[in-house]
Image (cartoon, rainbow, N blue to C red):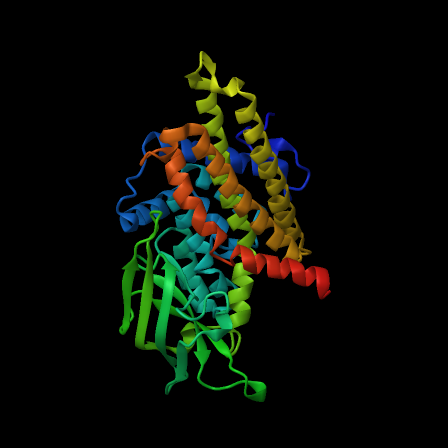
Length: 394
């Protein structure tokens, strides 16, 4: 298979974990699903409506079964990082909003699957897999981005064992359309040694005292600010024991972070294919641009980076599925894939010239969509800190 083979498994990198037959069947399913969407695309100008439509389509295709465990209607006993990466790489080739709709179902429900009470898991998680619940992960705050422990949203105990949430979360994906939030907050009671402790809570989207203000970003994703004023959370909606919130937040991010790299791979796949096709078809100075050595070498450089990043992503995913992934392994995957994809897409834009920046073109869309991946779930700078820590502090 050539470099631009549509199937990841066929590239035989030797690092993909899982049964190759099952993985190829999943890729065949994804190829058919994405082809159908390409033939009949969803209008993404209304990002809330598009997200709801995408969640329904993903559920109908059985793809949301990859974000919950089998006991709640999922595809495997536990979430598999390799499956998440394959799905995200394929979906991102078609649409960043589609990819976001998929992964948010996992990000916004994973903590419940890890530590929620059994009745909450049994009631909520099958609805997530069926696309009947739209999820959000409410962690980031105006003064607590990379430093999540600095969050100021508070969880104050109330009679009956529940809490009252007060505070603001920002840049929350799916906020304008979520029916279900996992919210992280500082506990009002201090932990051992007077240190702050944090809790995790499930909050329905229609909870009294919760309000959402949409935020417009450069790509079509429903994102917003979530304000909570006296939002009451009953005891059964607490996720995990008191003080366990940050552990659950980090466990969620560690599970899904490598798949951010896979989404970047999908964007780069599409950009490379678009650039190659254009250079082969576009004639200048009496011959196709693809015959120009300078342009060929430029794509050769970014293609090499892209394949190297893919190796890192699927190495990290396979290690997570085996249970021996290290933090620096995942950080390298996300860093390499997102930074390389930015360069691949920039080169694709340059290869297309004026067409590359025309609103509505594939490359223009990819140029907007890739930028956020270098920020969310840990900026590139944070990934470098993780890698450096493994080098110098081990």
